[in-house]
Length: 184
Image 1 (spheres, rainbow, N blue to C red):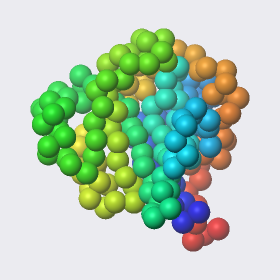
Image 2 (image 1 turned 90 degrees about the horizontal axis):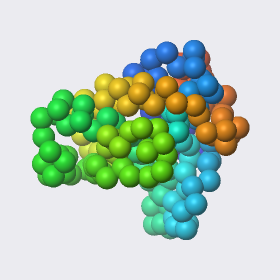
Image 3 (image 1 turned 90 degrees about the vertical axis):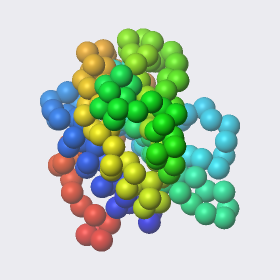
């Protein structure tokens, strides 16, 4: 997989900054699954991996291949009120300022309600686009993602997510594996 290093770097960063005590509660309050089923009928996308905390997904990476190109797209969930206060802008202004990203403040699905958090915002980015990565790096998403994950950790994982847990991906998230594809 030519995108292995991008996936590994993303997980190492996410794990170090968002799952700050991840090794202590892995599979109890958070997990990561490889190639999870999503129920999406769109066959140009496939989910590479998903991180779940409590009863909600909090980050995922997916591939898109339309026959003309391949992209590694990501989504990070943050605590909406915390994030918007940190950046000092509304979602419409963020969309104008950060045109290589997308922001979805309308996180309204069953898992979010069960987890007690309708106060979430999705940030979409493209790990294969340097401009998208640079714009994401210029935002204070890490702290707001950690605030959301810490809130969701108080709820138990859905059994189907813990059953699909990938120990190898979790080791990337917690820094126990730092191997790049060039070292394999």
